[in-house]
Length: 248
Image (cartoon, rainbow, N blue to C red):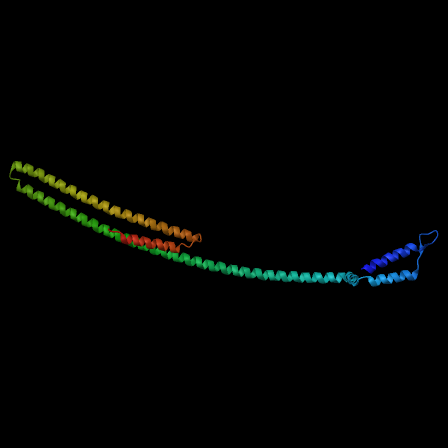
């Protein structure tokens, strides 16, 4: 490139020293010297300029080739994107299916646990009710027997003292007292029996309500995505332990 600038400077100097043509702006330059400088200038030009000129000459074909390559790259990219999207959809569907199957399995296990818990609770309720009824029957029978014995004793005492007026009066009073006491004892026994049965049924109702609330909370947690099957089983086991320690 240095020779290019040097030849241009010499060419400018040659034109500047040339003789002018009178009455015109033209001048007379030494032809051979100018041609030599032009040859030097042509030889000094870098080969990249020829390459650039070739590029300019073939610009349209190069642009067409580039556009075709670009379209091919875009088509390939779109095809690859479609393939990736299809695989992503397939993987997503598979993951959703697996999650749905797992959720259904968890819900099924929770339902089984809830059913077993309710079944155990009902069975225990039946057992408690049966024991309470047996105890009530025993208490009622005991009260009736005490009442009959008291009445029989009162009647016997009344018959023994009926021959004497004062004794009869006292005997009647005592007999009425004994009968009233027997009625009071019988009513008291009946009331205690009813209170006992009611308290046992109230305890069972509270325990059953707690169990049902735990089951409902576990099912709600499952619907929200929480793994509550283990917690429900633990509470069921704890309820079973508490139930096993009850004394009726």
